[in-house]
Length: 114
Image (cartoon, rainbow, N blue to C red; front, side, top):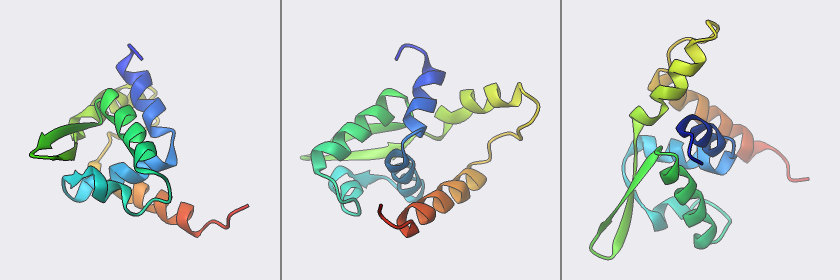
């Protein structure tokens, strides 16, 4: 996507990607550590990480043979400014955003499989 705002919202639309962002709020993580709690393949997680990186929400860095992922907190600034334009939203506070993502993750893991 050439529009950074659309790319950010598209990346945030997926619950797995939101869960990954929640994990990266704590610290940088190796790709294999990011993949560990999910019941999908490493290739699937790599695709999710690619979407997040393309949207600018994370960065990836190769250190030795390990690829590390890092949250880019300023990446949500444009989305926050856009939402503030509607006058209905408070500025995005990363602590509030973390609590939101934690709640979403808890709801997702407690929801029964259909």
